[in-house]
Image (cartoon, rainbow, N blue to C red):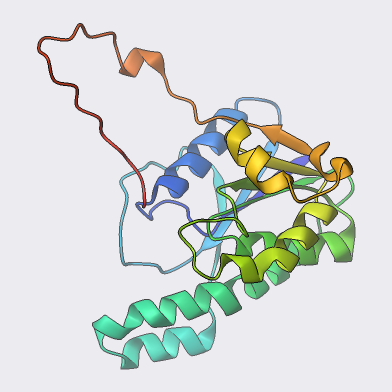
Length: 220
């Protein structure tokens, strides 16, 4: 049995999602399972010092037009190109690479959002192979309050949830928000995997004053 992780965000990218996916892979690897991670190659915009921890990572080269245009465009316009690449090209390349891995009935494919297009690659592979598939949403997709075009993605979200064998969120509140518009049969696929931490890294500290500092770590 193989666990095949597909995540656009993965070290050396310095995104919260990149670290979360890699650490999940590292801890799951302690069990007698073969784990393969598929992630993009060549995103030099940000770098992380997160170690590889001996995880087998299959790097997917970005589309040739993107690599050519990236050399021609000024730096300030590369973000637009990158967004286009992720939204329209990355997941198609990822689906082809997944199919080359020849996932079987004994394997489990796990796709991670953000970006949510990772799930479109999973959907394509599910249709072709019937592989067991877990779609890890974490954030809402069609109900994302920070995406002004979120409502236009309802059909995509429904297709993914309908086809996936399991759908994972990080809180019950997100489940209630997303699944309220779907039949009960869809909700039976849902599991909640909260963000976790090692309590040894965060020892109890007694307050020393009248002020409380709250730090938010992540993308907003």
